[in-house]
Image 1 (tube, rainbow, N blue to C red):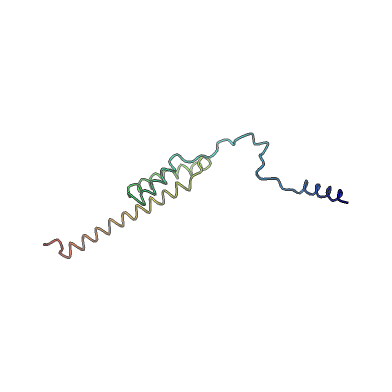
Image 2: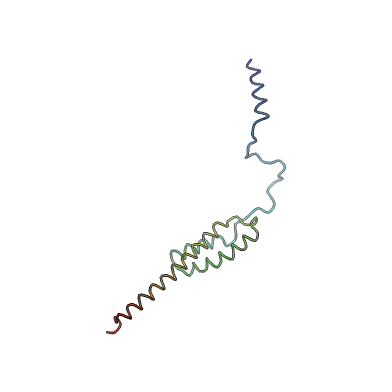
Length: 123
């Protein structure tokens, strides 16, 4: 009885088992042709975006411009590059830092105009 049950179980496992997704495909023939690589400027754009947000807003402008150019290259050939997200994050940080920089400059212009209109410079 135990032997019949074992044969039934083996038959069931053999026919209905799912293949292991981590098994290597014997027909693949090694590494796939043209594996996606990170964009050469991806990490630099991300670092410039962070630096523009934290330290110097000029880096934000550079990250914005370089990020837009790199995203066009990545979108033109999406199978060639795999770090689109890093490039996009760096570009967005560059946009945010540039906008904050412009708002800060406008704020200081308004402050100087208000102080000048109040007569504080007429001593």
